[in-house]
Length: 139
Image (cartoon, rainbow, N blue to C red):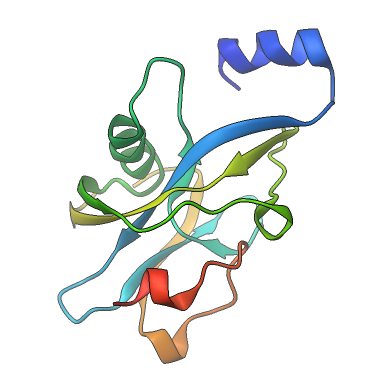
């Protein structure tokens, strides 16, 4: 947890805290979608994370994707903004997110937050932690 979030948690305890966040939609040359299986056992998801204070969404997506997958990405297009009950995800620190997935191009590397990285065709995709519409993931 960042010092910023620790400070907020100290002020508000475990009450609801909305965190703006990003998610990366990365495809390989065949159009398969990159998914990340978290080491914490949360299941499959897009590489994603919170936007830090003073950070642009573009900077956040570049940082988070590098931290979680080792991929260097270039965000190109915002694909949507998602929130509400279906997208309420509780981080271990009690924060909740509002997702803004973006299409990205990539190159490669790796980290301890990730159990597995795998590209999936639309018909072979596992269930995701958050219910992104397929139309935002495959185009």
